[in-house]
Length: 260
Image (cartoon, rainbow, N blue to C red; front, side):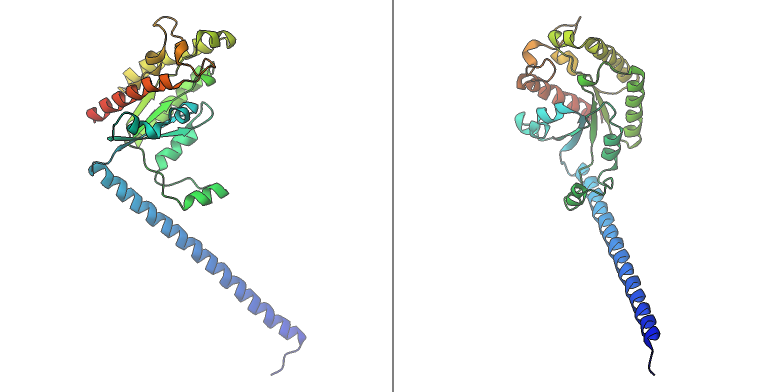
């Protein structure tokens, strides 16, 4: 049987159509396979995490904050103070609202999908370690601020973390020096007001408190940051301050672990 030109074109079109559908099905199956593999890996990580809790592995403490976590170098804290019972991680959110980073921390070992090169690259790495304890800390950079909004957001994060049965610890905001306060009217006053509310809220909710302000302030009245503890700008801390916080943090998480 011979086919004319229109018939040949129709046959080629049908073959091309079948090839396209076959290719599409192959891609769908490949993506499904990747998804199954990812869920399997995550399932294994969940199992490993559960086993870690009973195998004497370090309690993983995640601090959600801003610049303080980077400069503090929390991952090396156990070595600095010879304390192998804990491991530490610092996550940064460069604004007061830390809702997204709280959400992503609570998703672990799963990860929030983002169609970016960094996500694809990170997907090949081990899943992020789930938090055994979460510390929420705000920075003096975000004061003065909308105090009503700030309180509502923090209460929301506490509720979300508690719903996951993860212990949560609150941290007071580190104050600024007297000189820095002069150049930023309302900042120190806002920090004091927020910290006073935070202490009262922590007591009301029976939450542990990492009181950085009390550990680093010059006095109990005006409560400015000690001049010898700043890196030079009246806000960020130096190594001497972090040495103080090292021991405060270990003491605080140890007390919380003992309660658990």
